[in-house]
Picture (cartoon, rainbow, N blue to C red):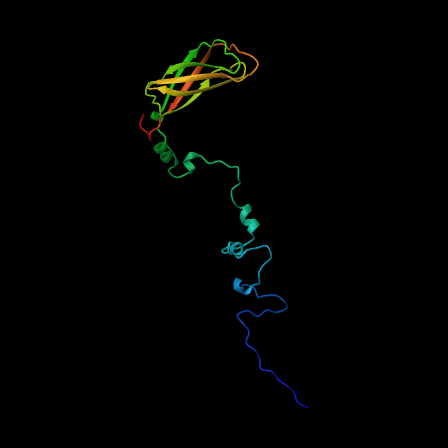
Length: 178
């Protein structure tokens, strides 16, 4: 009787016993067959994960949260550098509106010293307007904001009361007037 003895084979860096790997063992991704529906790029995103991904996500700040300006380093300085109160001009005027026919407009002007035709304008009524009236404005000439009241009702005219209108002119500091 003879016994056939095979020499012991050397194992790779990891001994897999009973389909389990020892704690702390690492397997190169190149040794793993493709994982269905997961790209190698997505697997690469797991690099550096040290514990449960969901636990790490839960530990992050909630989507809806607030910070005080002082909490963000140099935020106030950065904002002040980007926006200067001197870049906004403001003027109010009481405008006595007459009847505006259906689908028509009425215009008036407000003198805003320093306004230029390249500047942007926000016009706001200081009280509610009656009817279906849109209000907008633009710098029509140096120092002059034209305010437009547009009746968008296609069936009836409207005779709104007088209204105080405030024009805010935001200076365009990137462009010189034409």
